[in-house]
Image 1 (cartoon, one colour):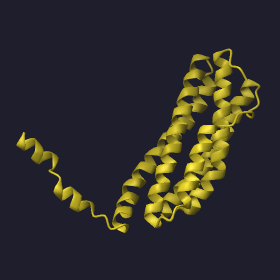
Image 2 (cartoon, helix red, strand yellow; image 1 turned 45 degrees about the vertical axis):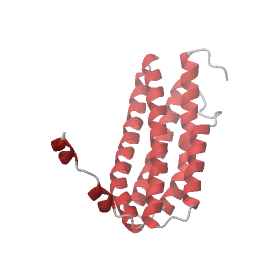
Image 3 (cartoon, one colour; image 1 turned 180 degrees about the horizontal axis):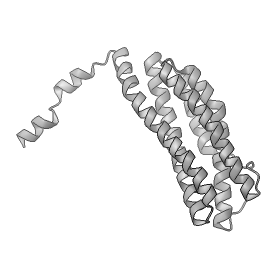
Image 4 (cartoon, helix red, strand yellow; image 1 turned 180 degrees about the vertical axis):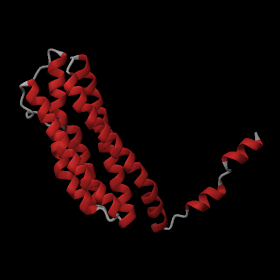
Length: 185
């Protein structure tokens, strides 16, 4: 499809996001299953419910546009999902696997945040206020998911460090603290 207008580009980007979300609907249960941390697993299960809502919102937008949501393969998400699948095949133990999965999940969230930010801007320029409202809801949920993953990563990464015998306190003890380097200056 050749995009001859901002509306054409908007529809193409929406199709890309729609395909990305449908790929995630298939990937998220696998990520949940591979997680040993109960809070992380629950987070993936919750995000699966949200992702289904994201698909529904996109379908609403397509309906308002009189367009079909299909017809575009999101190669970016396909690559991110493949990377995540490769990560889950690694022989990492519990917390280390969870840390790796969180990293893969955050790459997905950042990709989605970028995509939704773009289509939201297009919708605003096109005067599609109802679309903007729907896209804002999804964009906010994607950002909240990323924030939750960041919070979980702090705990999980610490557990992964302890699990693998890497004492972060030894490294911190060898580095001057921010306060001591300020005093020395």
